[in-house]
Image (cartoon, rainbow, N blue to C red):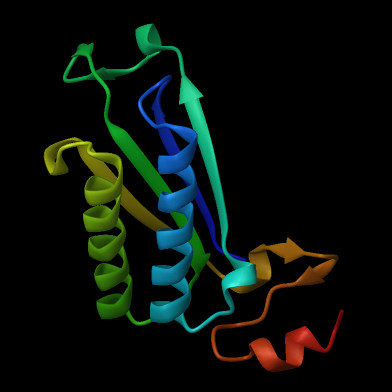
Length: 131
């Protein structure tokens, strides 16, 4: 269900760091939004260094965009963004001031996974039986 895209300049993150970061994003999202870890998708996108700028200058930020179903309490979404940001900096070594985390949401009915419209938060049990 949730999708996290981690965008960096090529070579910023090693495969081991990617694996560790994906695991931690999965753990944090699963814990805060109460979904099984197997539902969490993490994708890494690397761009050529000459294609990444911060403030108009070449840079190497770590940009993490997450998508989740609308309906989770805002306080929890803020806690999620803070936890992902802290983990990203700690695991990657990218300074905190170069990590940006944005959690976007939309109605569950706007997404389809495994051929089924996603359930509203809290209605996952009935959805699991639909497969």
